[in-house]
Length: 393
Image: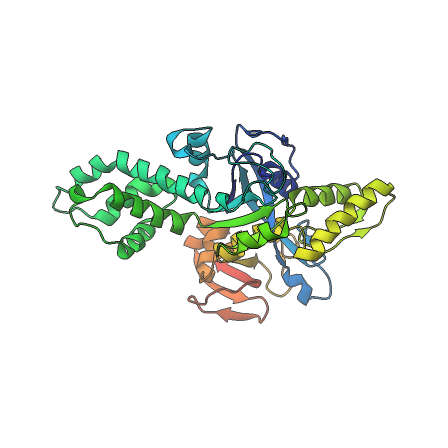
């Protein structure tokens, strides 16, 4: 399952974002380091369900009238402060938790209502642009430290006649989520001495930065957009980073109201409908959320998750079935499964995603939308419905 980590300084709204996105019960409070131990939960990305091409919706619990929600893991860790790579705050714990994440959502307090330590200050008195780069810098320095501490091993290995620097560095960085291909791509971009003994700290930092950029892409969430000065949002966008304005509190309020049956709302919708009885104060609060949604096309929470997976990670959704005509599994369930695959994946890649035995026994595949066989090198597209024919059952 794809894993997305929420990062940011303390009190930026990570735990509220996490609670809204997972509807899990976590502590949310207006003080630094509310989160001590990492929270792990299941959230979803949203895409169109292929059942929209049929007369009837599929009825899957993750499909809401053609809005398909595909599970991902969401990780909320302790807030990060400057100097975390040296162990300040809960830094080492924070950074260790990020090693298995596929992408990172940097939750920024766009209101400027918390300082660099995550302590509450007057809204607008702190420049949120200060939060944009420091997480990347902390991660780069932390990874550079790991590389530095293990560099003596690389130097010893380099004395062997069959030494391969790509392989040696990939072995070192596997725990960070870097593959040999990632390391090789980074080395192609860098200028460095052939002899590891001649590498300097600058070489190791450059390697750390490039590997981190390849393996931990980051998107910015300008949280608390409902109270943020407009110029703060614009300043964050002007950094050139991908930025999504959001109100995590607004999303949480809408999801709780939907559970209570007083509004009709699906995560990622641009608006909602009030269908139950509300007090004047509750209605005023929801209308304030609606104003933000009108400005930004929604609360931003679902958009951030979708952009992280479908944008940063460039994934597509494929739907394996056993009956290519009815789009069902063996029990008659319509479109029961959805898999997030790398763009460029083939039917055999989908077979392995379903189960290693299915992949090992792969024979061929059928396109459920055309009822025609698919070539083995066909690149799957978003929303493809595929029957895998395999010797495995």
